[in-house]
Length: 352
DNA sequence: AAACCGTGGTC
DNA sequence: TGACCAAGGTT
Image (cartoon, rainbow, N blue to C red):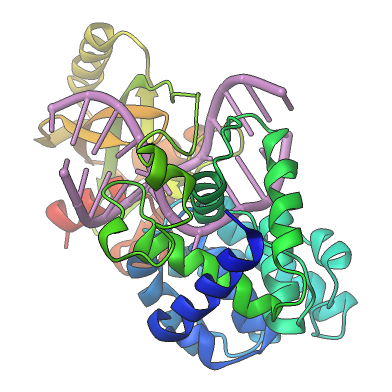
């Protein structure tokens, strides 16, 4: 397709079809940035309530910078990819302390900040500062690959530059923020991954994929994700109205979030044996043994059981916490801790 | 540079 | 049901 025709059709489509989204009512770089981080790998419908809560609780980047990381993670709870929240907080602190609370206005400077990669730097630079930096996200891969018949494998990291080059040519002479949001809205609403709305698309006369019948074949993406199984056996130790929890560390899922003491092995049968052996100890009273709960992540299927254990003696309880790097929390404090959805669901079912 | 990091929706 | 995907970034 001719580039000029594509851009004209795209902008015309956008001016009629653009979505009314809260972060589009403002050019405040803080709000643009916040919305972009929240929407990474996240649907608008899922991210929307989080955006509204964050803006309400932290109206400015300084407010966010002054919060604790645990508080930010708690507000992020349920959105997933929690490194986004940790980087969000770190970035806010940097902007508050090193940039006088003002986000830098260029692609290169934005790129230096935590959690801001090439996509997000281009989005902020273009939308908040009118810089001509084209974004490349999943929508852009899809739209450009279909319209222009680009068949490079988008799973290959070299391919990003190919699409960036094309998008940066197309954005020339356009309003950068408008162009970027137009192509993403077009991908999200019109040129969707499955069953794109070609019947009502203004591009079909020129679209490579439509004319070749290759909508389903583009974009080309080779890699398939490998999923592994894990087996978690949780011990929920309680005494009076306190429960033992611990913060999860780096190099595994849910860093910075809280869960319980646990044993894990790739062999579920062996786990069952250890689990029942420990549960037989006489200073404990097993209150509940949960059904198997399956929790699915992008690269993992986690099969879990929860053993709810009352520790009869306060001394034992505190010694247990000491020896296992656990901490006792009142149930009200537990509510305030950031937790994976798996743990949140269990607590809700069992305690709240 | 391939692998990893969550959760929810869809077909 | 399982597979794919959703405004990516980091290691």
